Image 1 (cartoon, chains in turn red, brown):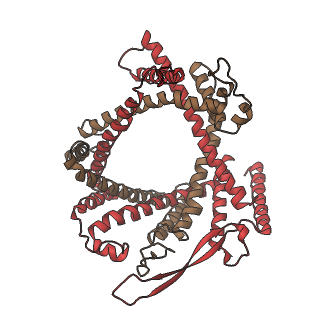
Image 2: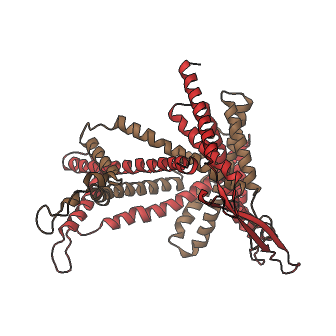
Image 3: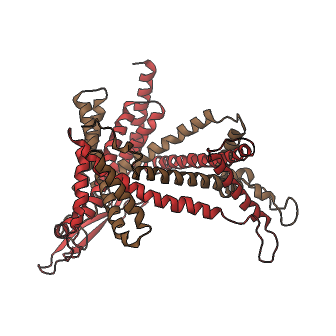
Length: 298
Length: 242
């Protein structure tokens, strides 16, 4: 290991330990909650009424520490520290690729994949497949508020079969069968997108561009600023369209119009770039706010 | 079987969905197709999870370099999956307390919520925040006013960046409302950075965005038609697959 790496690693470890000890000593980086007791009565009208009790916890500002009913939440405090660790570990990539970053990156991949699967399971598979095919079972397990008269919709056997065929892709043999659900997927996407894009992005945008070059007020006077703005938009859209039109040579007048189109596009890209940078900076400031405010309490 | 049926399925599905926009009788079919589409998308996530599992297990069994990180990925994956599917720490719905599984899977205080709040959210937000450094560094290296187009892009980016921050007030806040010429004409305050940003966004960015959107719409429409008519079959892959 290089000497500089050892020195940097030592500095990082010592800095981290120092930070942790200072935090513990100052009593910061803690999360407090208010206990909210919940009392619920059973909904069944046939069996004798039963009462259920449990507690939920509401996060409160640290300033309320010591008030009655307010207690330290170990799980949320641990969560705060884990979140701070994850944030710092990802930021450590700015110094260079390192085991800490790789570790959190691996955790992120695993958690993200599982998160997407869980959300898909509860919001789609259970709600829109299980409940449609087996409403009786769904009512006594997950959805007690479901109408008892709901009948099974056997049409949903089709997406079930297609889904099984889709998962067949993981099988070592015969995975070509996954093309069938994939074809459904592609066909549905093409059908939905064709209409929606033509409606909103093609016709909608053209409609918005069809406006008067010269605008007059109610008393008949020329609104020259409004007229100029309309003209800029119309000329801009037309010149950009000419630039995108590659079926003719960009020579003569077409060359100059498409050049103007490029300038409009450059303005668009410049503004989009600025917005992208600002979006990332906003996220960065959010993370720094989390570290300095929520965690360090500075 | 391998190519004809998928082509038929995609064509029928696509044209039925297109027909729903024109024939009211088909609207219910369209709604059903959309519901099936969402279900298949949900199963695609399951497929994605399965694929991740397969790849990481292959990496571990072959003891490829970095296989330890694959193990970390799998551990994180299984723990999150378990606490999410088993609704660990989720209380029943208050209106139906006798139904233990009736609570919301992402209820505040549950273990899955804890994973979302304290691991998934900070990690995803920090990953994207990290791009702030790289995007700035790339811009610093790539942005050179070499020609007219690059100069326009650079100037506009600087104006919009400054115009949307406090720097706008700091640099141009002192511009007065006095007209430069005429009584109702342009004033000095019209050249404030925030106002210039507004003009750029409303009058100069709009044409570019509109042209791009029109181009995208035409591209999507033609690609969709090629897929539905069986001209583009690239999504079917090759015939060599098992």
